[in-house]
Length: 329
Image 1 (tube, helix red, strand yellow):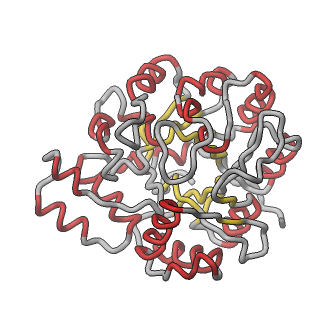
Image 2: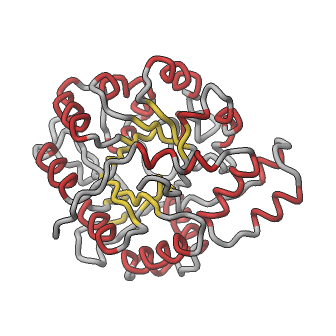
């Protein structure tokens, strides 16, 4: 993967139409948002009840191939669990099984598999070994939405094995309003100290920034942790959005820029209007970049306009676990 231009934060969305057991349950605001997202992909909202798995993957593949990216890390989405490992079927709005992203990555070199494993699962260690053997390049979790307290000492053997395997952890930090929150306190990046101490390469998604007006802003905490942990990074996914871009230019600071990785958070919508409102870009740049139809490319070009270097989207290639010979799932 050396030298590849990678978007390291792209979500797979599935309703189980491919037979892998995935599901999506949307209510209220989340249903409205999902409908808006699929429309921007050129798909009708009815696809949420149709062949979502196949249509979404096909459209995403088209976007990667027509962009300046070589590949994207395609993310699974774990179910909510209690700390004792009990699956909470009553919580969560979506489930994207690891098998789906592993299969898509096996079939298409443009996709790299980002699996999702709750460390409280009774089979968490076995699932970790299986996914790594099948080609996983990182593990993604949303602690505040999947109820994962990464500082829980019961999970230490899991983090230690991840470190031994060289599998990075992409962990959501900061506020979240796209999927339901189970425990807001788990968005604090300081909860990631245990996996960092175990030697895991940890990527704090969104650099611990706030997503809503009343969310805590953990950006300064994340900055402090960078000084302590050389194995800590941050991705700038969704940070072009209206609600999360407050610290985007701070990530260009020379003391921080070397730890920044590019991600889009696709299919989160990309609107650069707040960049203009804050006078970070001019009207001509806003019109030019906003007119780019490909959302993956649009997100990146806004970041280029702010001054992010090509290295920002190439750096992650040196952190991802190299894909093994993929086995059949």
